[in-house]
Length: 61
Image (cartoon, rainbow, N blue to C red):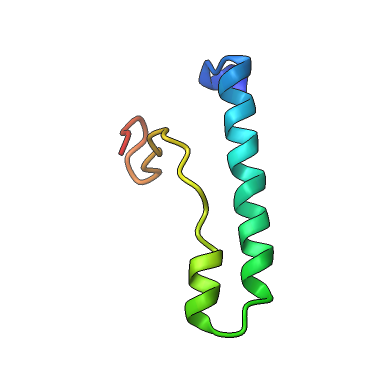
């Protein structure tokens, strides 16, 4: 998918690291003692990349 998006190896590595950090945060949030703690732990890190609005193909948000 990285090739289709025109990402460099550095872009791919950054996105993969952000994804894995998000998965780790989600797993840690599942063990939190309450909802407030889970919310803090479950936040995925920012990637710095725009997201694609799937309702409007081609539109970046």
